[in-house]
Length: 121
Picture 1: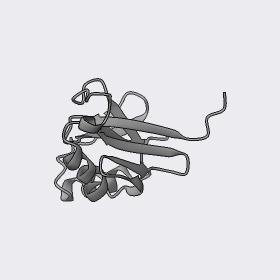
Picture 2 (picture 1 turned 90 degrees about the horizontal axis):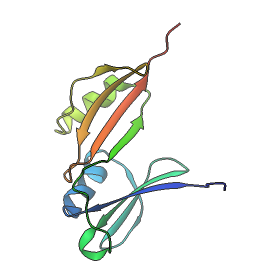
Picture 3 (picture 1 turned 60 degrees about the horizontal axis):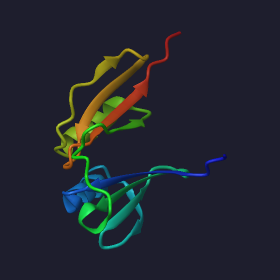
Picture 4 (picture 1 turned 90 degrees about the vertical axis):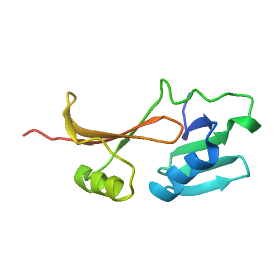
């Protein structure tokens, strides 16, 4: 099996708030949209979609058991961006896997991990 693209779909009770979080606060680009489903383009092969659970056959998990993990090039700039946007990022800390990391939570409760690799050597 060869996968061409990947799309994570989050089913949400707080659909409008969650869409605004990713669209307006994280500034993700909308690639497709209906009145209950919004797809964001993360890269040429990766997508994140937000679906209104009221219009789907899958219920929200209320943010439990989900971490969306995104690598960035400049963690300090990403943290400042999140702080200025009022997203309440955690402090940047060292991650055991040779990285720096901070966390945000979307309106539905999904944890968003922002990290940068720390090269040693």
